[in-house]
Amino acid sequence: MTFLLAKHMVHRYTPEHMKWMWGQGLFMYALACIDEAHGTDDFTWFLARYYDAHIKKGYKIVSSDTLAPALGAYMLWRKTGIAAYKKIADDAAHYMHTSKRILAHLPNHMGTGIYSKMYPKSIWVDSVMMYGVFASRYAAEQGDTELASFALKQLPLFEKYLRDPEYGLFYHSYWTGLKTTYPRKPMFWGRGNGWIMAAIPLMLSYLPEGEEKSRTITAYQQLANTLMTYQRIDGFFDTLLLPGQSAYRETSATALIAAGLMYGGRTGLLGQDALLAGKRAFAATENLITADKKGLCLPEISAPTIPIPGFPLLGYQYTPKGKNMTYGLAALIFAALEAEKC
Image (cartoon, rainbow, N blue to C red; front, side):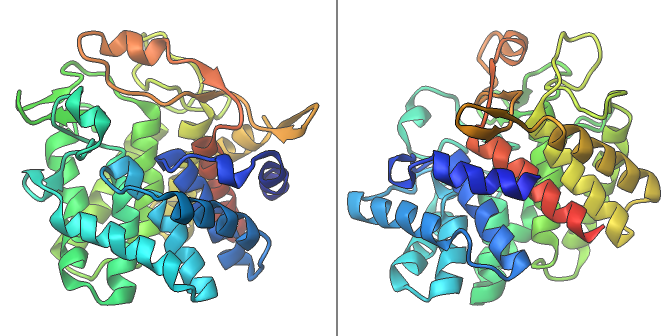
């Protein structure tokens, strides 16, 4: 059903009108992953129209969020051999090489874009998916040893600065000026922890063996085992993971966590309990697929979410839900591709 949903979506969207941003970029990457996994060419036309339009208009890679579209461009270049798509990936790699580091080897999540003028310098858990997946694959396949070293450091550093030692979950961000996580109090965003669960399986095969890869695996295992304790009876995960914080069930978090749990159960990095929990989460999410006047759709996806200065809890609780948001569709595709292998 998920792959049928994807085929419906590419006829609902006009790729030339889609923004150069993280959600759209992850959707392009997810579509490319379907074709890669199935040996098909169903979505190449859609990716080509999206990237051709932005090449013509001009694109900027100035932050973690605006780097994410490079994933799909790199996949499109691998399929077509068209140099213009490779240039996008090369530009993304250049950004990773030259972006100013604000904490250890980590760049400011907001980079130098417009939002960097309004939000404190910080690292975000989202970046593991937005640039970590790209960095690991591009570096391994293009022989970029410096970028490979950068990719390898990601999870150990995010664990150091964002993981709560008591709860075992990851905070949304870390503000370097205040030298503290933000939110400061235990408050754990479901989709943020889902980004890690889904990103690590997409990175692992490209990371060289060694201590840092072992630490990445350990962090993934610990997070998976913790997350399973927060799964709802109906199979979903909430937008906030701790009980008592007035959260609501959320599609993208559930699908991302499902992808990570199924991968671990399938590969033996996690136990059979993780495989069953992942399958239950995926089934719960896929069962939400419904139809409206335009075709199939996926509801209950929370809108883009930031840790709001001064009122983080309200920001999570009152972020509205919608349907067919590109990153939510991408999350479900990642889970469906993993479910196929189980």
